[in-house]
Length: 260
Ligand SMILES: Nc1ncnc2c1ncn2[C@@H]1O[C@H](COP(=O)(O)OP(=O)(O)OP(=O)(O)O)[C@@H](O)[C@H]1O
Image (cartoon, rainbow, N blue to C red; front, side, top):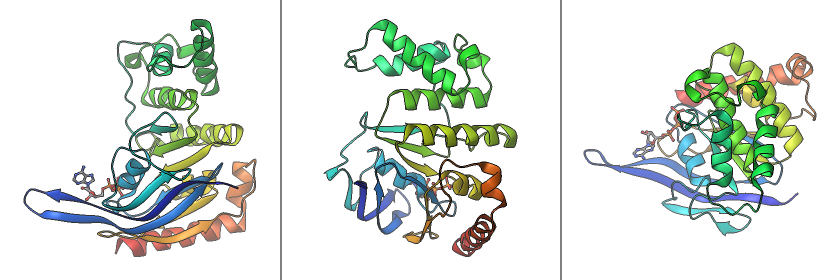
């Protein structure tokens, strides 16, 4: 497998007017291989989103480097797709137009209008939104809006998908069904994924590897766990396995101790 993302000795902090410089991430190093699904989990405020923003090119490290296939990530790029907790859809466009807008934003795709429409429809279908394609965000539930956001990010066909608590704002039932959809999409699409979540079950169900950050300031990678579950995954089978229960218990324990 090829090493795709490399985070090498990265530190990051922020300067505050009153409190001065506050370190967030201590020295962080890890790499993500092409096609891998890696989840970052850790106590609140440990710096998970900050780390993901650096991978997305939205923040720069203070020291160390973040690179995609050996080249420093200097800013946002189409190769790096991002889905945040809050869907940012354009309210005056329909679900389909929102996906088309993203597909045509830089005008360089080389697709015809019909091909672009077809691609948008394909992705809305894959997240089970065909019937809502002509509706505007205001007419869609939070879960449906988030699915439009996911369809839009996947439709751009980035090499790496960065997901920051994409299901965090949803009710338990919608969240469960979207986890299932994400599992299928990630197995069909075979891209590289980095997910930030608070949800241990979500991390266990979706990932190949889980990185546990320690409590900040100066958070570090406390554990790097490779999961023993094969693919394609069947939720019931995984959840009933002894490995799952043991890993779930260990993760919850290390998250509790990291938060102390
Ligand atoms: N742009 C910024 N300016 C100043 N401080 C920031 C900025 N971004 C993040 N921080 C601070 O960095 C720390 C880590 O924030 P971050 O959102 O990365 O943590 P997190 O682990 O994702 O938290 P949560 O799990 O609660 O979402 C926090 O103390 C936060 O206030």
